[in-house]
Image (cartoon, rainbow, N blue to C red; front, side, top):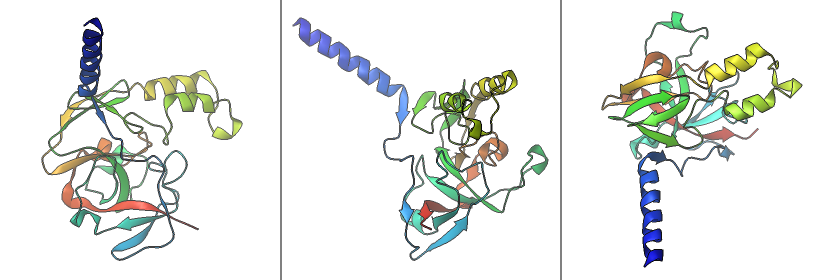
Length: 217
């Protein structure tokens, strides 16, 4: 009987933990390498755009976009989408956005989104996945700090740099409501991303395709 109560307690604890988080076990961190395009697909050259480059540069170079994908699939959390940049006050940013960009879907229509100490929350629940928190060119805080020891990282190991890293990964955004016809998109380099952190949730009509992978060279 005692063992039964212990097992029941463990099950209740696991259930409570799962109810307090939102997981994504489908989206993979690395992208597929593709030999060629097929019908309804085209090449988008993302060389030199660093706000959605990925941890290993997987979103740099020639990307395969499927413009027909969402005619038969729903936009899903974790998708990296190709979208038309809406009108916004470009004086807010240092970068010059292109007409079309790519970013990752973080929050879905009707959801509430917030950032607490660098962690993303959906409807008050922790987004527990590799992209569920603030990243620096796809890197976690731990990975960025470790890179300070590498002279090739481009980051100097100074007090100023460490203060920047601490502040960057501790940022907060008050909870916002995503409209029913819109999605909240963010790049993997939030400090440079031209995405919903700049212009807010994006109307679904501006999403023109899905990034299917990187074209093999």
